Length: 238
Length: 227
Image (cartoon, rainbow over all chains, first blue to last red; front, side, top):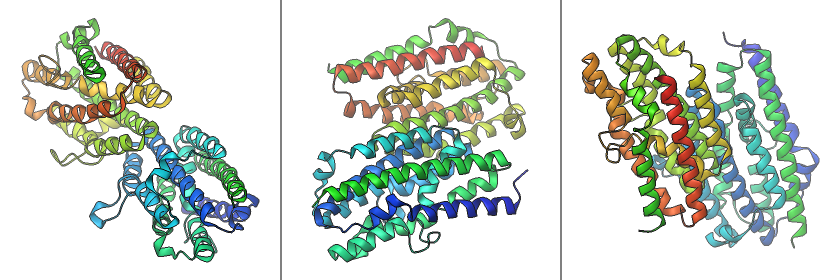
């Protein structure tokens, strides 16, 4: 037996509200109030590549615990992220992140030799722990970050879009040259619906819906801590 | 021979020794009846599902390049094997038709308690160990199925031959067993290449050996439970 349409609708509205609230929390507001210099853009770009890597770790763990038909959806999701849609000439997202770094004057080696932000490392571990929890919490924990990055759901634009606008404003780098940001502005709109696909099939009861909200809330909490660390990092740079 | 050459030789010996264990001998000595054949095929589908869990966990913990190799590996298993135009779980269910099984038989199947314990043990290795250990633990089950390495044939081949000899069902009709005779040879070779890239020190080698030993121990317990 599936959940009623109104139950799923209410769940969706709650998740969208959480994502919109996220953007106006103090750590996000602080991150989004920064002014980008070249040095700041470089460090931000490198740390975001680590974030993308951590997403790949987490989606792997989520895939491991999910039922078979959900594993297939996640596998396809990871094609975009890990492999790239070769038939459409699209590159994987790590390659895109490194390639985007070129517009900030970064070489591929710079990504290899720069350490992860300490606070980032701690957040990445927390996200991995969340990804290893029971599968509905785990999938919500990963999927909510793509909902939070969907311009279709977030009033005033997603995080990738807002950062892209800041880089354009401060460093005169047009969005189309920020190939990783530009890709995520589009791709996460599509990926943001994954969680609802899951909920319609598996959120039969109140406890399943509570598990989804719990996973989403916990992930957004880690996300706030992470963005706070990124803001600290930018503030410390010239 | 270098560190990787020696290591691969040890892994080959381990998968061959597996067939000399009492658990494997007992399992392969049990005469098949149609009912036992049905039980095995259903349990094999659950084993395949557990493999999908574990490989995804391994993907989660592995470096990016290895993640990509595993993602490709899972294409055959989870999405579509071009050899048979279906994924390997669907293939197992389809194979069941030959011995009178319906899809519902797979859906309502219960996991015997000792098998469940083995599945959880494989999960544990895949999720909570260094990636080289986790990776090897999953890889060894395909290496143990590789007829180029295991003398007298891997597990799928031997079980397929039992269906042929004891139930009169040609191996070609046991489509999942038949495909795995080939697929696991390819998979274990592709996956094995990663050892060349990542095993550089004695510590790396020991991580690989730990995964191999632990997984082979669970595999023996699993075959013991089924037998």
